[in-house]
Amino acid sequence: MRFRCKRADLAQALTVVSGAVPARTSMPILSNVRLAADDGELVLTAMDMEMGLRFAVRDVGIQKGGAALLPAAKLAAIVRDIRDEEVRFDVDGKLATIELEGGQFKLAGADPQDFPQFPAFVEGRAVRIAVEDFRDMVRKTVFAVSSEQGRYALTGVLFVLRENEARMVGTDGKRMAYVKKKIKGGPKEEVRVIVPPKGLQLVERIIGGEDEEVAFEFEETQIKAKTSAGMMFARLVEGSYPNYEDVIPANAERKVTVSAADLEYRLRLASNMTDEKGRAVKFSFGKDVVKLFSRRITGETGEASHEIAATYDGPEFDVSFNPEFFLDFLKVVTGSGSRDAVEASPEAEEPKAEGKAKKGKAKAAAKEAAPSAGGTTITLELRDKSTAGVIRSGRDYTYLVMPLTIDA
Image 1 (tube, rainbow, N blue to C red):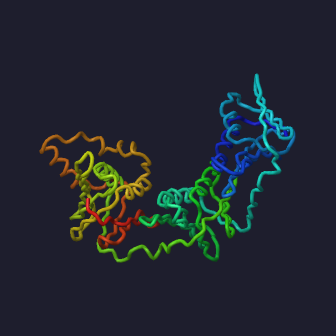
Image 2 (image 1 turned 180 degrees about the vertical axis):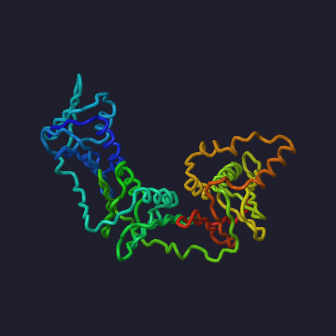
Image 3 (image 1 turned 90 degrees about the vertical axis):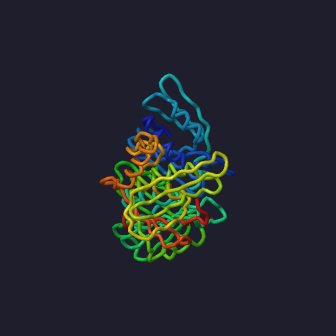
């Protein structure tokens, strides 16, 4: 096999497929990446038997087609460090020569015939989802899955496909994220599979700028995805997933609407004064206001209290939640993604209140300030202190979080 290609394109492809190369494996051959040159394309493949990626480099100058199997980490390091715009490969058996200006590398590999076969994608069974909808669904659910291997089914994302609709659900038993999107077409009979989060995140690696849709195919034990530049397969998670629709409380007596950004900012501040083992922030709901209170009674002791303008006209009500569970959801809704984004908000840049006058002024401003025009609002639906709180962002995104039995 002999070919030449742009170094940057090859480096990008190696970065993409590296997500499927196992960090440790009892099968040394899986530490390699397979390169196959044919018809103007160089196709890279990596897998760990549970999941795999295939990604194509286009506009490759191929003098002789063929395949090679080379150490993934070492090849990626070499290509990353080369400064030349173009690299040339000459593979003879298991030995690859990488040529560049003023030098070369010789890299020993393995027999590409020994590498596991990548499963084929059957176009006729494909279900297609818009790229932006797919990315949005993954972002809104993967953070809520369980990390406890004992609850195997909950370590995956429930992926439900119906005619004209797709849904994803993530839960760890203490909170649940549920999102749905309209799609074109879809299966006549509902498909319900549990997908490992890493598999969904690998799909994002093979999405190119020209892709408008991602195609999915389902088998009894696998999910497969295809874009214009690549493919992904992943073994499905086994087990029985909870009935997510039945756990959403109905007939909530209390409904509160609040700015997502304001709540994120104030709740993050309040979370600084919670105990490590019993993290709790008390939410107190009153006429058009939400009050947050937290207290730290171990180590560096102290307390925090904050107020947020809201739309609420029900009876006064107190309930405590784990602030991290709330913040995980709010970061997705606001798109902040980091503490810096929150700290850069206009509210965060206000001068610190000094003395009773400024403290009273800040308190009045918090009461009077309406949610920012055009800002995202969320609605909290609450029934009692022992029932999950329901938080809605728009009509298609629902989040449940269990209250704490202890008060802040």
